[in-house]
Structure formats: C-alpha cells, structure tokens
Image (cartoon, rainbow, N blue to C red):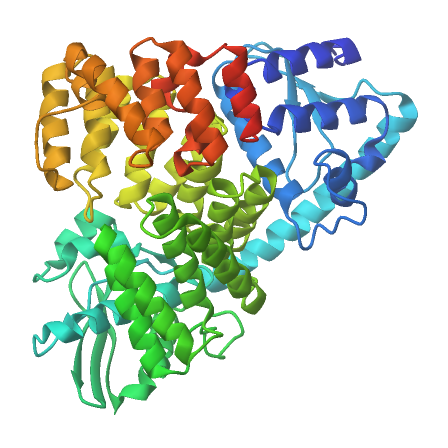
Length: 618
C-alpha cells in the first residue's frame, strides 16, 4: 500500500492548480481553493462550513446568513466544475489530486488512480494528524449519509417529476389577422412559456429560439430537428372587443397525436387564468408534478388587464432591439406601472430599459441610471425571487456605479433563483466578468447562456467581443458571423464584426462590414472613418481623423473613449492615455471597458493605465 500524500505534496499540487491557465483567470476560485486546502491541512475541518466560509473566504460581514446569500454554494459548484476541467486537461498527469466532494466543503486528497492492470488501487487519504483524520472520517461519513439521503430523495422525486418530453411552445396564431393584436398573441405565447419554465422537472425551449417559427405554418418534424422537442404546445387566439377565444393543444411531434386540447371562450379579463390553466394542463398531461400539488402555478402578472396589455406592448418593442424600440418600451412600461405600481415584472423590464438607454445615451445619464436602480430595487422588494430584477440591478451597479462586488452578488442571486435564465448568465458575463477581464469565467457563462438560448442576440454579440478581448480574433470572426444569423440585430453587431475582421488582418472584408454598419446606423456617408478606416487598412485616413475625433469628444459630441481607442491603435500612447483619463473622469459608460478592450492593448503595462483601471474599480 502506498503512503499517503504528505502536506508538502498536497501544497505542491495546489500550487500547480492555482497557477494553471484555467485558474489564473478564475476570479475568486484560486483563493477559495487555497483557503479550503490550507484550513484542512491545519486540522481545522470544523471551520469548513458555509456560515464560516462566507466570512473567512468571501469577506462577508459577521452574522452572514447562507440562506439569503448563496455565494459559498455557488462558488463551490464552480470550483468542482473547474477542478474537473483541470484534471481532464492540464492536470491529467498530476499524481496527487485535490477534490471537493458534493455535499460539503472539506477537500479530499488522493493519489491518481493507477492504470488498469497495474494492480494498484487508489486511496482517499489525509496527511493530517490522527485526531484530524478521525474528525475527517466522521465528517466524511456524515457527508456520505447526507449524500445518500439526498440522492434517494432526489431519485424518488425525479421518478415522480420526470419530464415526459422537452416542450416547445409554438407562437400562437393571431386569428383574424389584425396587426393590432399581434403583441397580444406574442405575449400570450411568452407568458405560457414563462409559466411552464417554472414547473419543476420540465424542460422548455426558450422564447427566442421559438421565434423562428412565428408567422408561418410549421411542420412538427422541423420543430424536432431544430429545437430537439418531442412535444409541442400550439394554438390560436382571437380577440374581439372584450371577448377572447383561445384554442390550445399539446401534441406529440413523432406522430402529431394530441395529448390534450382545450378551447377557452372567456372574457378578456380572464386571460391570466387561461395562461395558468394551460400550463397546469400541460404539466398534468405530461405527468410532471407541479410545485404545491394541485394549486395553480405562481403568477407574477397583474390583475389590471390594461397594465398587462401595456407591458406586452413594451416587451414587443424591446424585442426589436432598436433605439426607437427602447424608447417606446420605456413609455409602455411606465404607463403600465401607473395603472399597477406593484407590477414587479414591469418594474424589472423598466429597469433594464433605462439601463440600456443610459448606456447608449438615449436618455440623460443621471435620469436613466437613477430610475433603473429605483425600479430594480422596488421589483426585488415586491418579488425577491424575480431573477430579472436582480439581473437589472446587477447591470446598473456595474455599468453606472462601478460597484463590482455588489453587482456580482446580484447576478449570482439571479442565477441562484433561476439558473435557467439565459439573460442572467449572459449579462453576468457581459456586465461584470468581461469588464473585470475574468475571461475564462466569462466564456463559461456565455456558453451556459447559449446552451439555454442559442439565438439570444446580445449574448452571441458580446461573446464575440469576449473572444476579441482574449486575442482569439478568428474565433471572434466566426462568433460574429453566428450573431449575424440571429433575429433583432443591433447595428453595432456589423461594426464589431468589421473590427474582428480588421484585427484578424482581413481588411477588405472589414471595409465591407464597416460600410454595412454605417448604412444600418443611417450615416450620411458610407466611407469608413477613424477606427473604421484603420481596420479597413487605411491608416492615413485614420490618422487624419484622430484629432477631429478628440476635438468632438472635447466638445461633447463624441466619447473620449472613442478617441482613446483610436490613438492607442495608432500607437500614440500619450494622447491615448490623456483621452482615457478624460473618459474615466467623465464616468463615460464606455469607461467600463478600460481593462478588457482589445483596442487599448498597447497601453497594457503602463502605470497610468493601471491607475485608471484601479480608479474604475477593476
């Protein structure tokens, strides 16, 4: 029998892990792992519990309550996943392994399993004193006992709740063809998706992925091929005055056979009950247990039909991803909240709308960001489990307040309450991990978001920028090409695609992309200017434009960040740093990219650049 790993061997293994590429850019994970290992090696396993770790490992205040702040559980899940990736890649040859078993926070130190046929078996061992080993064994048995109990309980629960299928909700047809009612049929579809997504044990295809089927007859085989669903909910809605007729059907994709169908002829005010009944009936037909037994699904909607209509109109405008759409959406959400000030989803949507309007300077910044935060905080007060509200607050705290720690807490809370939210994963990556240049973590969150919703436009777009920040230019080009295939494109996608092509050395293609971007933005001239010209291979044009860009920034027509990027790309560090300093002083929305922006690469290593990064809090 081989000797157990010594403390020195464990610490050497720890060093290799935290210095690996996968951990260097993993934010707090290296420190968390080091804390767990070193605490265990000191024989203090009793301190490795959630309430203590929150304070000692994550600097939470005394009295930390893990029931309201899930940071330890969330980080432990990420750590286990990152360790698995390490041992599957860079650490495949490591002889001493450090593992974190599920159900607890006491690390296990073991030898790598010997190759088959060697006759040697791996041992889970501890290099600790005997007293600690006894405590570890007791703790381990407790973990095993809890784990077995949890596994048995979960297995039985899964038997009761096992989904019969992955469900796709086809866009409900607007019978009668009145364009004025399009928003209503779209809203009904989205609300049913939302309700079904909250049924435990049921997998539901995302709204944006199903949007490709809107407005056309759909073959069920196509649904199976494109979204992997084996059952579909389909139907129609006719709205006439105050009357509503909704037809809904649940069908098997394989043969089109109906599993359930129902026709509802009700007053318009009963639309909320209809949505709940459809979701409940689908769950029952699939024999999926609904939380709370036979009780209706939790509804987060309003009882004001007019407020609901305005909210649906706002969502329809938001989905257009245009400047005018953002402005109109804000108006609709505000009108809805005048009728029902406690309508939490409308408050969360309004918060997101104001954040985007502030970032793109469609609304005066002081007004946009203050209203965004106020709406998000009120939504959370009304519904603490509304993921969109926590996501919106996280965005505001990051992009405007530069309160990165508080922002991360909100994003993690959003993911904790709804891990299936592509929006939460995507914005966590975009608004926090990417500005902090935690690129490995950002990529993981982008991938999670895209697994949940492959055609979500902004995630495909910003993932491309993350690849640029990582210097993976050709990968970024391919990602932007995927983004261009999604619906509801923002004109910036074409611009960033041109930037990726330029950085990859594909200047002729970059020029064509920049011309398209200028066209989409409604520019009077399609000739690339400034950075556009530089990416297109026309450095002379870029140099001639640079002083004018800086002058426009000084007079308030452009951002200083635009001038800083151009000067930096031209190798003019002094002028670039001057403009970057002005950008940070002004607290321009784009200043959050001071650390990660690939166009500022030439400034890396300069003490003044590092000071600006610190000033933004990154």
